[in-house]
Length: 388
Image (tube, rainbow, N blue to C red; front, side):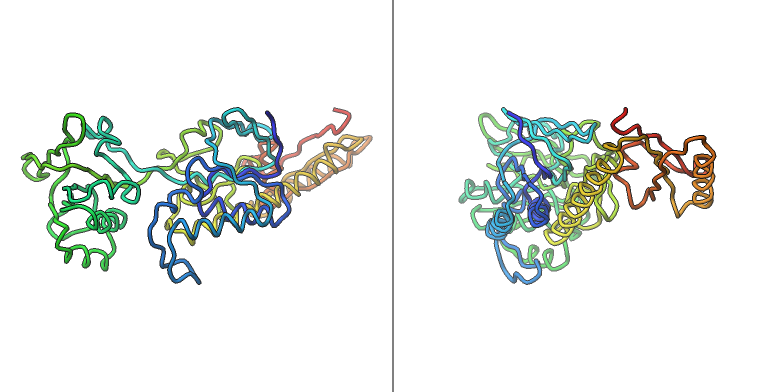
């Protein structure tokens, strides 16, 4: 089954939902795809106290309001997993089970997933004592002993929550005594919590058990000495990785898989934008994700309008057209374009000549693979229009 949209947003967290709101408000036929709970990883957040104008909320409540807002503007939100994409043409293709979606533009707001360390036993006991989500699994360890690996904000916050259920929570920290990666206030509170115990200068070397987790081997990073620590649950909070593997080579990624964009969220692939935590960025918060989503959808709307106008003026033209590309920030580019324009005038039958600033018309420049530099300060492309 094939369905057609103006804008498809892959990911239904705060960035994706914001893109859905802005896309719908711009009267674009918008589809938001989320493989899990609408709200993404924020859905698993128990408490949000730093989102402007919302003094206190939970992840599910805040995300439900964002989703309702997006739907009010006409966005279609579906719980589906994207299997593959094809961004090689103007028709962007997104494949899910039993359906193929087509769009004029796509926003990638796929977020992140927990980092898997590959520690012996970690994969084998996933779902049987090994977990990456306290909100999902903490209640299963009522009056039991739990071990947590990590000391960042997420690790400490989640450990505090686990301690509401568990008999004890032992936090394994690779750093020296008293050094945590979380913010100062969270560290002070955690160190005072009688149910939290810290093992510094340590890491987990192995998770073991029979049918379920029965303990971990904790290794002292200074001496390499290992000892058994009995427990019934192990939570890993050791950072996140971008959810971009399914993209293959369709968009450029940095060596770690993060997506790089400018302020307009443009990935440099005509009509494809990124937003939220999947981007290489300084701060990953709900507030910054919402800003990304708004910018990405706005850029997508402008791209769509630009390409529709281009189609009418150029691709559907009854006569050939010369497209001249230049960069005002590149010394000599304007003069080089002038020379190309003059050559056209000297032809026996000059063609209609349209000029494009590559910074303002990125979508069109990307369509033709334009790359201006010191050796190539301006470029002309002949477009045949309907005659082609």
